[in-house]
Length: 139
Image (cartoon, rainbow, N blue to C red; front, top):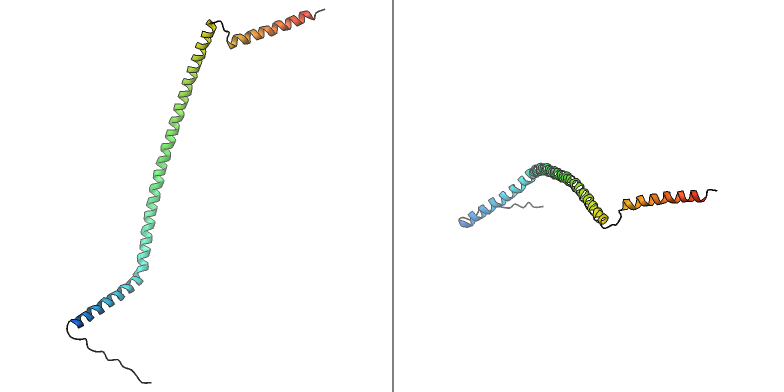
């Protein structure tokens, strides 16, 4: 086989030669950038991952802190509602008792017996009934 040799033709003089020179430099710069990214890219990626993890940890801490603060506020509000509910129930009981007493007095003035009066009368009626049965069955 014959050996083929390629002769390098001298760059043409002038502007065309300069353009070819710049094009070659641009090409070499691109290859160099590609090579550097290949070497340093994984290191840079790992640095980005570490930075992301740090941001994530800080974000979680902040969310946990905000969540704890919100839960504390909810607990305080719940306690306040419980205290207010207790006070309201006491006041409602007082109002209900006062209303019952007034209605009872008004009914009593009209001559309508209260529940207590009816119960007392029922007890006396039962006692009287028992007494009458004993007297009626005596020989």
